[in-house]
Image (cartoon, rainbow, N blue to C red; front, side, top):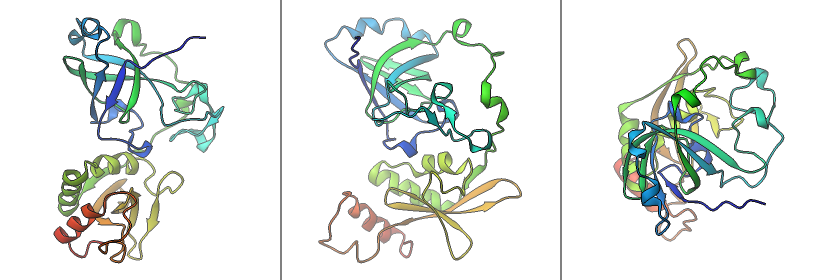
Length: 262
């Protein structure tokens, strides 16, 4: 039985499953592969900077079970698909592969973009992407030929951008990236998202202990993120209360900067 040992870890701001884009090539996510030291990997990296894209082989470290049938974010009629016909992380051996843009190499650090990996993902191997060997533009795509992904345009009010910037500076959480990922496809579906409808006709989506309030336009398939608010009550933010997630000070700063946004 073969045994695989990680050659390093992937580091990025995205930590949770819901922060991972559905396809890395459509995202602006960047990260760093940090290779293990004292393993001869300095020589193994020689000549890699000449490539514009690389394959990262990795372990889906957050998945401990597998499913023979899965429901991808986009499938014909919402039906379940055999896992071997998908890129679902729910696999028997938890192995994944992602073709990312190579931004640079510094020592044992490989900087990449257009990635769909999460922080602390174990990296098993690195290979160059070679178009003549890896690209088959005329290949059939099975059940995907039956789908027509209906992507929504996601935009942000200026206040929402200011709030997102503050939260990013306080915690590293990128709510802009989260909203673009979660609201660009079937934005009102509560099947995979923490969606609630407001009395005003607006909607809110939860991310950790924050909520993004947004409006939708069915006519032009657009989503407008209006503002961000804390999901804590005033009582929950009182001094001395339990801080289960270690983020209440961030919410207190947020409420001082944006009073009434709760």
